[in-house]
Length: 283
Image (cartoon, rainbow, N blue to C red; front, side, top):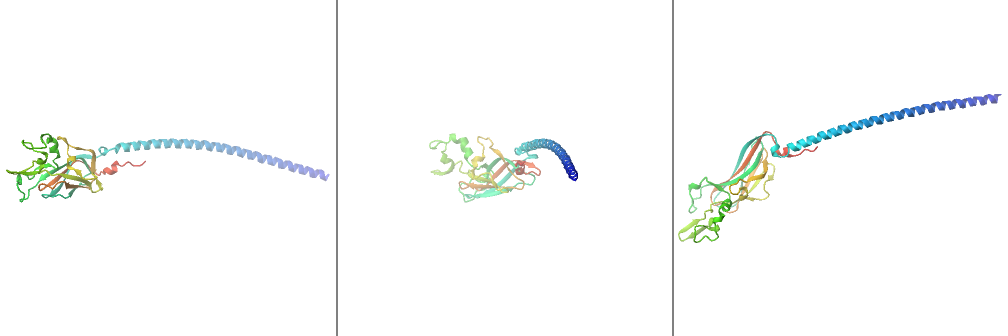
């Protein structure tokens, strides 16, 4: 009888244990189901957040592109830089003595009103008095008169009437235009003998930039047949920069005088820096 009772108790304990395990398993299945629902919900929220972020990034990319396009348009060239324009000329004077043949230079400083944009350059020669020791000097009538810094424009415009012989007629030869020659009646100066010849180099001292990588002959600054020679691309000098002009005679200077180097252009008034305005910011 006691063995039957003990067996019954064991069976009851096993049944209770099985029921408890079934209950635990049911709870575990419910927990797994709840977790799956939570995972699905989190995944849907994550996908929604990703879509929202993609839309924000797309809008931001569009805005940045519009800003970049706007900046590119506004800083395309010097003409797009805002600011009041006013005509401006800067002059550089370089004195030379009779028969000088060495390089000389002088400078002019850009005033603080604003940067200077250069559109045209014209070098001219202003006559000074000749030393009293020079024979057949032209006198004071030439003092202050101006001529080009090269005979090239005169040769270009008149070369057709110049022959290569010059004897037996009133047309001088090319050599006679420049040389002083002697005859039985005395000395005669060539009509272009008093015209100087110069090479120039332009330096922006504030930035260390040179407009020329080597000296440029004066004829390069003149237009042909009375047409002004404008710069193909506008140059500039910032506020406070110094423009230095280097002048080298290619033949000894035929008379005392000075180079008058004229820089044509305009000034942009205000706190403007052209270099900074033309640099494209990274976006």
